[in-house]
Amino acid sequence: MNMIIKGISSLGLLVGAGGFRIGSVSNRVGVVARTRLYSIGGLRASSSSAAADDAATENYGTEDEAQELLDVEYRGKKISVERGTILRTALLRNGVSPHNGQAMYVNCRGLGTCGTCAVEVIGDVEPKKWNLQETARLNLPPHKYPGNQKLRLACQVRVEGNLTVLKYNNFFGQGTERLGPVSEADFKLPLGDWEFVTDSPPKRKQKP
View 1 (cartoon, rainbow, N blue to C red):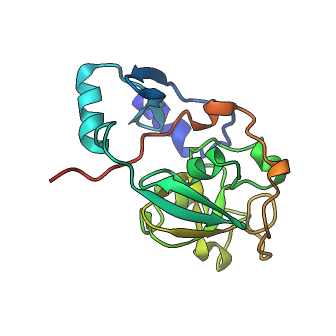
View 2: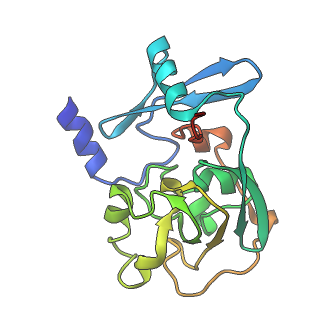
């Protein structure tokens, strides 16, 4: 079974509507219900056990910890983002998209396999260099050297400082023309909260 799961993951399929993801939503006092997801092989699966929730709290901090907000500027719009938030999520939840045109509908919803959320990031994010998904996808057409070297996948990086985020033209954001101010009238969130089904909570600093 593990070999099947890893095989599916390695195909780098363009998965829409959160395909191959299993999630559970847990409610907490004073907090909007959120999806807790844990990675198993190439799939994302959920755990409702007390041990898993304790581990999540240890990694991400407690719900009542003060949020540290950072500024992200994207195509003429400035938004406030909690440190540790996935960049794609931060943009979409604030009414702007890292996807161009029809890519707002046809994308992998955060798996890092489609490459349509490619952006240039100026500022501090984690990881600081390409992870495995970025290395694989940004080296595949239509992304190519040398233009790909300045790009990151918004779904694979977390905000760790004030950022300026640049978007380029074409379906995969692989063009050479920097896009101007965003038109909020063109913004679409086709799947609503299901767009974020694979997200883990923002990583927060531990108290000393």
